[in-house]
Length: 122
Image (tube, rainbow, N blue to C red; front, side, top):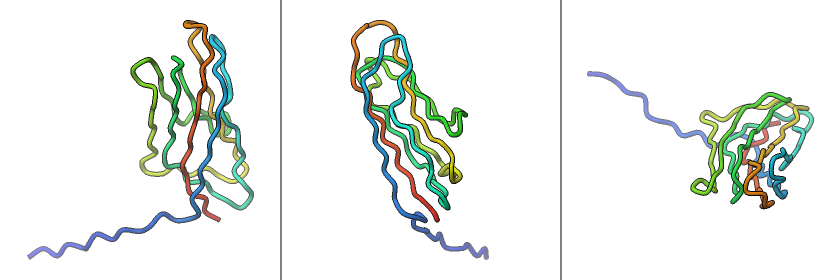
C-alpha cells in the first residue's frame, strides 16, 4: 500500500500589489507604459502581466534592463496575458519597466494599458 501526502494549498505570501500604467502608442517608436522600482526591504513576486491595446506592436517587461516577459499585439490579440508560473521574484531596488514598440503602420496612436499583478514580501 502506497501512502500519498495530502495536497496542501499555501496562500500567496506577502501583500497583493497591482500596478497599472497607460500611455498612447507612438507609431514606429517605443514608449514606456510604466516604470517602477521595487521598494526597499521588499521582494516583488510577479504573477501576471496583461497588456491591452488596439495598436499593433511588441511589448517587453524589463527587470533591471533585462527582458523577462514579452508578447505581440495585433488586430486579433488585443488583450495579451503573460503568466509567471511559478511567480518570478524581483529583488529590492530593481527597476521594472513595461515598454511598447508600436508598428509604424497604421500611423494612428492608440492607448496602451499594462497591468502587473504581484505580491510584495517584506
